[in-house]
Image (cartoon, rainbow, N blue to C red):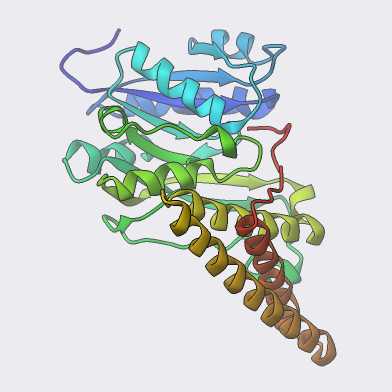
Length: 312
């Protein structure tokens, strides 16, 4: 039963056909809730599978269950926001269905928010691998994340370990944009809008989750496609944040120019790496070229639909 004296927080778990990892995650979230006395928390499983494959798992774990059959990350996350509001929550904490929260995750995530220092709180995500990683991937920094110290203000944040104050989201008219549902980047667009409208996004590195990297995502082709996709959404987000037609045109030109320059520089660095047999120049050049090409595509309005049907 919810405690009326404590703020209500909904932990939202978007999912799509990941029965094994979801079944492992939900008891861990229950442990986090039991260990966190500052808030009254509950779990909402938001199922993107039209066949409702997560329903039985959610019911077994005594979690709330909501079905969202519409495809796309944005639809699932918006449904989570609505479901949290409907249940009287004043904040929602997103975590992916294959992640593992470290002990103390929830308490660390809500602390800056409860203290009045943040409207959104971004926890730390650490990639974990089943086995040895291709040295080329390590040299290229494909899984390296930018780290922020505790309490640092951020201008954008990913949503796989993110707390959102729902009152702030309502006041600023924030929602996950459906245009990014199949491409990814909906979280960056959402949080950039939030920051531009005055919301405080704060880093909480002690709120840590482990993010397993599937073997197929450690292939060179996959990481280069991801770098390209990140480039497209980076440019697209920035263009769409500009309201005026002239402003958007200028931003498109700017991103096209920057992307072309990066792609050319990356290609040269990659070629030098091949000639000199330097794995660092080879990998980082390829990554820069792919991301630069993505920026050009994003500036021109082209999209790479990485999540047209995927596990959310």
